[in-house]
Amino acid sequence: MRAGNAVSSATPFCDRQSSAITPINTAERQRRALRRNRGLASALLIAAAAAAIATRLIPAPGFWLLLLRAGAEAALVGGLADWFAVTALFRHPLGLPIPHTAIIPRSKDRIGEGLGDFVERNFLAPEIIAEKLRALEPSRRLASWLAEPANARLAAEQIAAAFPYAIRSLGDPAVRDFAARSFGEQLKELDLAPILGRVIELLTASGQYDALFDRAVDGAFRLLTGNADRLYAMVEERSRWWIPQAINRRIAKSIIEGIESVLWELSQEGSEARLRFRQAVEDFARDLAASPERRRRFNEAKDRLLEHPEVQAWLGGVWDELRRIFLEDLAAPHSRTREAIDTALSSLGRTLSSDAQMQARLDATLEQVALGLVPWRGQIGGLIGEVVRSWDARTVSRRLELAIGSDLQYIRMNGTLVGACVGCALFLASYYLW
Image 1 (tube, rainbow, N blue to C red):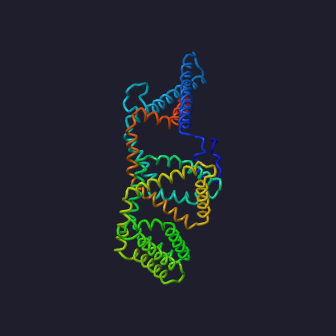
Image 2: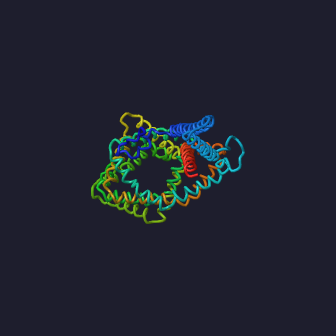
Image 3: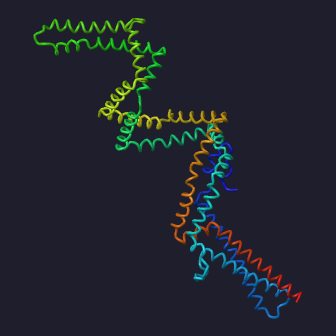
């Protein structure tokens, strides 16, 4: 039994990976088998020739020598005939351009077309693909495999190991600019108005609205008191030169006190100003979802904002920051990304294992995808034929001989042995009957 065939039933998706037979080992094994069987067939043929010659050299042979000579001569004829037949498939025997030899090199184009047609009709037929997928039950197998913690961890490790290469490849400036532009284009095409309106509606309906509103009012209070001197300076800068400074400060103070009064009223639970503000927010949310004009103006403002160079630069910075965060996390011994992938795969395996309906749905989806490729089977068959046609005749002959030549050597062996038996039978029949 080949090494690697004894694979745990819990890891059906690792069978191919655990197998010790690689394409190189397979080719070498075929090459050794061809040499071995060819040597055996040639040895039988040489033995028959030696026996035929030796029995001719013995004077006055008796019954048993005549029997041996008849069998050896017939074995030599049968072995030579089958050697010629097998050799004629792949090359000209003895290098002589005998008609109807080197059949495979001369017919490689027809062989390629026939192979493509065979694969198309016998492997890519819709009913065959559907039946095979149903028998495999891929969703159930995948779920059972992922349900094992070790398997989920292995899959997560493999995915996480591939992430850094993919993320680093996205660090090229051209890719960065493309990502920023693409993200901006996606945001432009996305109609955010109804989404934002729905989010605001959910927020105002929840208990978090009042807490968030109070924080916003407190922040406005702190911002106002912290920038009072700046407001005084701004009023003085924009005032007429002939207005006294005391009046300018009184005007600024009145403005600040008025804003504080509004903010204080908004901070009071159940105040009229607060209720009006809440109503205005709810009306704005409904308009975003229902008013075409409001949605149009909102989207126009969004597009102008996204076209601003600083926003484009910010999107690029977000891209770089996300890349940095992912790379640092993946390099950490206890990566949260790796743990999240592991948890997600384990959860998927457990959930899918207990949900036969979802398994059936996934299997049906896979079947539809596979059957969706069936119209391409003609192109696949044509591709096989085209690949075979692109090979030179010697390559085709060598590859086919390597694949089936060792088995064809049994024809030579059988021809030699059967010829010996037939020769002996004919000799006995002539000796006793005639």
